Structures are given as C-alpha cells and as structure tokens.
Image 1 (cartoon, rainbow, N blue to C red):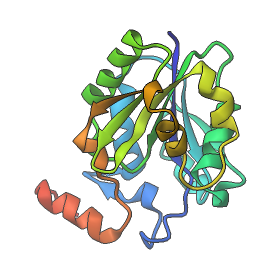
Image 2 (image 1 turned 45 degrees about the horizontal axis):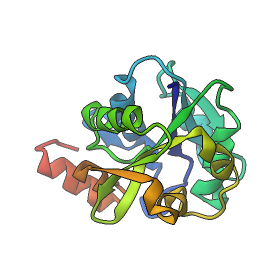
Image 3 (image 1 turned 60 degrees about the horizontal axis):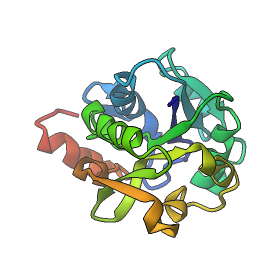
Length: 196
C-alpha cells in the first residue's frame, strides 16, 4: 500500500468573514493546526489544494506539503478533489482525503482509518459521525477516476454513500466539528480555555 494525503482548503470561507485558513487556532493558522495530525503519519505525498487567497495561505504552509492551486475553486470541493487527483504520484494505491477546518482530528484517529485499509484494501474507509460517513476518508485506486471527475460541492460524499457494501466506517466524533463561522471558532477556543 502506498498512501497519499489530499487536504481540501480552497474555499473563500464566505460565512467566516475572513480568511478562515489563516484564523488563529491555539497560536497557529487553522490550516497549519489541522495539518499537524497528518504530519505524524510518516513520509508520504501530502497535497494541499488552495484556491481563494492562495498566495497568502501558501506562505504559512510547512515545507513537507505540496501546494496545488485550483483555478476553478468556485465550483466546489469536487473540482478541488479532481485537481489533486491529477497531481498524485503514479505509484499511489490509496488516497486519504481530509479538510483544512477539522481541528479536533488527531493522528491517532487517522491511524485507525489506515489500519482498516490494511485489512480491507479494496474498500472505501470513512469516518462516521452524526451526519453519516464523511471525511477524512480513504479511497482505493479503483476509485481514482471517479474522484477525478466528481462535480458539485458535496465533495466525495456521493461516492461514499453510493455503495454501502464497499464502505467500512470508523466512529470518529472528532470529525463532526468543522469551523465555518467566527462564532464556531470562539466556541472552540472557549471550550478549551484558549484565549483568542
């Protein structure tokens, strides 16, 4: 198995009223904070897809990431996934797709997904929480062409729910939180005793 990581962070965060990827989370830009969980997975190709405000966001990213700028980011998450899929090394067997605004996910939860891939290498492996299956999720090579041609703003969700028999889920309550507004950011900080 050869795994690559794709982190989606291309949106203009209109509900956030600012550049969400750069909002301070525990002293770090939000996107950098979220990337920490993926940094501990070992050396693997890690692609961060940017779009809106790419020039400002790229400056803060760690040097172990590869940046892809999606010129069609306004079309939604699906176009960012397609953009990343065309960037992956040819020997990649699985891709782990995550978001740049899920601050509670730790590397331990991601490792749980990877453990399932080793047991079920031809299945889709997804986090499961209140909204059903979602990202972070791992897809095998046979899904790569479908991922590359997705459309709309639902990302890979339609692929996850299309064939229940092809899906293995891992309970991951941490994935239920993504920060979309300033209020949600303040709530996150207050719950952890962090000063903005």
